Length: 341
Ligand code: HEM
Image 1 (spheres, rainbow, N blue to C red):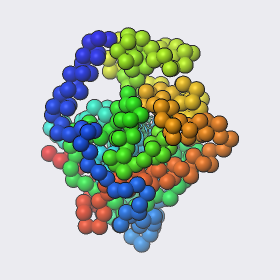
Image 2 (image 1 turned 45 degrees about the vertical axis):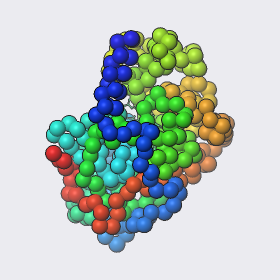
Image 3 (image 1 turned 90 degrees about the vertical axis):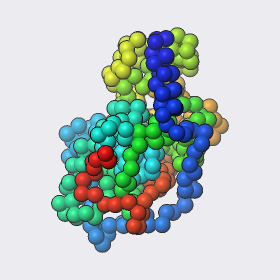
Image 4 (image 1 turned 45 degrees about the horizontal axis):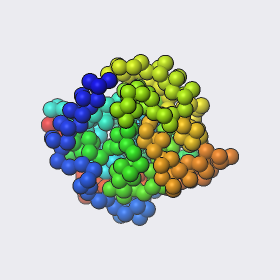
């Protein structure tokens, strides 16, 4: 375990040395909640009116094949939008392995082929019209909808970026051991507030995580103690220890994040956080702030998901506005996975 910590420290130090900036020197994004010129619900009404149905049909096909791809595609939008904005830069391929896809936080990210599948379908009917960034945003919404969540309106009109840098992903994506202060900073530098943080974290009501992302921090070496996180529910911790063996590095065994309904978009996540059965330190950290903890507590006790669903629509819209390219900026590509080097 000490060796693992050492490896993590060395890797983090190497990243910090090679990446120019970190959390402390953020670039500010647009103000939260404000509309962005060039983005609109129904942007393709005149140029590709059937695009939303096309994306939904492909998403149905994808999740019928493998339901776990729904959560993967929801996470995909988070990784796209937090790094250089929602510009599909996560799809760009670096032959030198220095792109966003090669960054440590992208490890385990799935959905590249599926975004390409949807894009190919859209290209058949509306060539060179719809951006990959918009397809990522629509696919994420449909992933939520197809797991019984809300079908909220998605703003479109984004264009695709041409730059993908590993360091940006290392710097801008919060690690799962983040505390509440760090989480709020990671979000605020992108123009997102505490409410976006607690609402968007509710995405962890679907999907799964690899043992390597939480086992050391929560089960085997909490805060370097060599033991388990004392705030973690003991019964839950015991079941996690059965799934995730001690001392394994890069353990890609997966466990579901929502203990009761991992494929249903519901309030299960908040019940887990409230009862100390959430997976990541970053989930549990929501209980360490008076505003986010009050929200968790209210959602954990709520009889209906309606409030969460309408908050989620707003928060996803806010996230979808981060640093977007519109108008003549960026480009529309035929395929999303272009090479950058
Ligand atoms: C608040 C900070 C966040 C942290 C630290 C975080 C961290 C993580 C980690 C470590 C995983 C497991 C990945 C793996 O093992 O393959 C994960 C999974 C996931 N995350 Fe987050 N996440 C955060 C916010 C978000 C947001 C804002 C969204 C969506 C809007 C999101 C959606 C998801 C989904 C759906 C999964 C499951 C993916 C799958 O099943 O393949 N996360 N997250």
